[in-house]
Length: 410
Image 1 (spheres, one colour):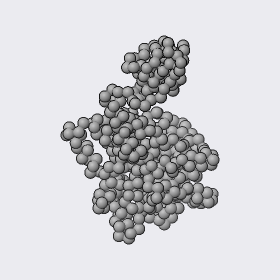
Image 2: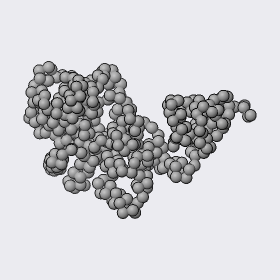
Image 3: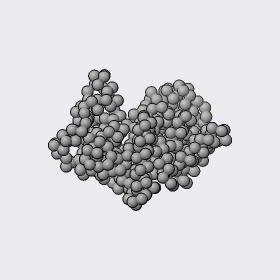
């Protein structure tokens, strides 16, 4: 790729909320890339991850995809585990203070983080570091000196802090330390580029660049990527809203969940999750716009691409075949769990016993919505005796073969 193509790729999917800022970052990135090409020194690029949980979903991998693009262009990528920042908790996208984790909890979560990241990143080209390496050595005087470069007004102007202040909700002093700690990460590693989501704009553009400049370093380029909407297409992907596409799932489940996203968010997924270049995405969107390609077929390409990233081409193709067989041809899957029906069980009892619903209220709701079928026929009364053996379908994707207990042929 020439420099223009590299800039276009690396800025793909970025959002700054300000066009002038975006253009400024693109110009600085171009300058760094030109210098790197002339000197032969790869850019030092990083993204920090606070291991506050172990359940990663597709939304967590957006920044990893951007890091991988830098890796593929020959730059030095550091996957920074926020072993110390996680102890404070990032307030950036929260309307209340995060619970403070213990060092043991952080260490336990960190063990699984990197392994999951290597499903996107090149293991051989990834440097893993922990920010406790330098943050643990800072003194109170160091923190005071860093704080001299910021005003209280700058923090209170942040959208989430401003909302909490207006609502009379507490803003704890330790939450303001987070931006200083993250900014110092950039100083400690002397980074050229930091990648983060839009919720990290203040921490990267304000805190990181300002601290680097104050300490005699050239301010880093901030690559601020958009936030991935969940399967509902509206809210950000989050476990709490249940709209996630998990990483640790199956190829069939991942493919099916991608196919469930609304058509209008496909463009975001193209730019944030796939390995496709801007030119490839433009060509695909032009085909859809002209009617040459049906949106469903474009989404199938997207689902196959995303599933392939995490499970490989063969598994992605098998998942696509299973999806076509199940949803487009109306067939039942070849493999499904088996459940032995017990005497006297109601429809609701079987739904709970098979684990196809998470609660009795969910079971009643699905039955009322005609989302529970036995051999294709809707079951209409959750408290009625279960009719008998057959293929039980719950919702769109859950199938169980219900059989009579061994030896019972009545």
